[in-house]
Image (cartoon, rainbow, N blue to C red; front, side, top):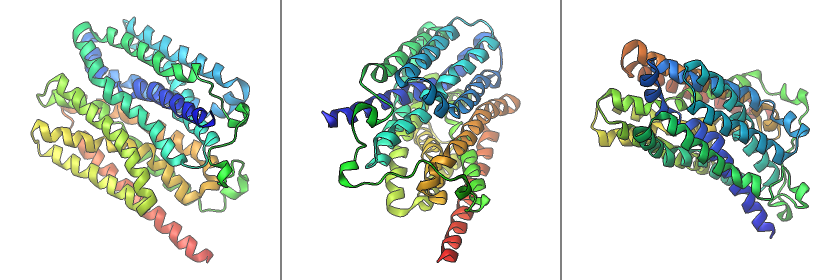
Length: 407
């Protein structure tokens, strides 16, 4: 029965990641072009709604610890699921662009509260052993949702319009939230009269309460490195939603664009597992540099205007940006600050990443509107990749020198 309870926690968190992150965010790109064409506005104007959603999510994510102290866990899930689903239904009824902006701000509250931040907190409370693997699996379900439902939603939009697409999305969000609402899930194992997974085998949990003065001991440069990497990697993860628009801009069908987005979502899943496994074997720096190199190779290949089959492979590699952002900033923060200070530093690092994702989504849209192509976006991403690599090398080198000095 105890093993079943841990499994229930995993299933519930997979559902929250799939709904509040995967469906809410990762399928947004398939709506850009249909809404822009129907309302007679630019793609950059439409993609701004995802920027608003991301900023709202970034802000509400910082409030999760306080919300958890104020409301019961299951009530939190229920309230923000209703907000998420209700806001999506209202988007199907919207007739003005500003309606979509307001509703995306509302939906962003749910994304920030019951998305990745909530999932990571619950998993950290319940698991000591295999925390990395479990976290990768649960966060990976955001990519599963995007990969599976992007082409389905595209088909719904093609047959019935973008408004029907939002109604279908609302139904799927409801279903993904049901495990967390119906299963006996609690915030901590103690509330269920249990211990953390691995506790009986002598595994030690990292300290959660950290002396604020202890954070000042490592150089402030480490915080700048973590924040800088979070900014760069999140910029990279903001481009895949534009892949459907890119496909259409180079003469491919909307269906081909949806498949490219699905390929990037598959990379979202596989990349998170790959980065987690590789970092244990060869270290965080080498793993992340290898990931950035693969993304760079894909961008260069796309600029050579290959055929559609190769573009699918490139879309997969570009999708590694999701993993470089979500899992990468976790690795960098743990490596540079240590596990004991991770809980204190990471929420702020996550805010930087989410905020930069919000800006980038709109930036890529406006770059297309200004130039009529995505060429400038590809150039910008190449610059970002180089910057991220330099930041990583600098940060890890500085960490190594500090460790030698301490010895």
